[in-house]
Image 1 (tube, one colour):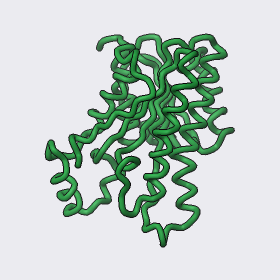
Image 2 (cartoon, rainbow, N blue to C red):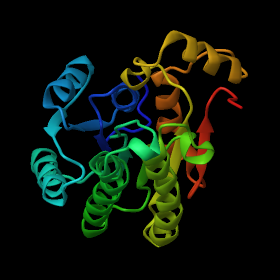
Image 3 (cartoon, rainbow, N blue to C red):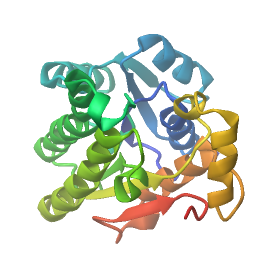
Length: 249
């Protein structure tokens, strides 16, 4: 274990899911303490149980609710007696349907979790960094998606939410620069997670043909990019959107 992130507290939303869980593993391996926040406390606890080393806290959160986000952050700060200086917004959902058939509540829900959730968690955590006077060197990493750039049939809500995350990231990076906090977005392509398990095998094969590397990505590969953006090794990368798609066209 190296200690690139030793002494740092990381707040990861969506910590129970594929990419979120892999991110927790990668950050913990580098010595960070983890707040593993997820809508599903059981999967958050499972993530924590897999982590070696130090002190980690699973927390139930509804990222679309300001009071739930504030409560989770209060609990985390109470537990660790310090504020998070790394924030990873990995909470995300899909509710796929053709636009003409898409229920309004399925549109709203996806925007609420993926976009509003990213805003609420970022706002609360960065405010706490600034108040505690530890913002310099802080890093926020937002999980967007290549779909936010390309669009996808049946994903009007998802693509709009992820394009929003990218634009939000750019604006936030402009505002937070003076506090020494960097904000970047990661744009995964097709990654081996529960989200894509429902895709029929012939559609998966079709995707593979569009990927230059000829395979679907692993959550660990995305986590390595998130780790890089969370660490001082990316100290001059700010407001960026970095694609991790295996060369998908």
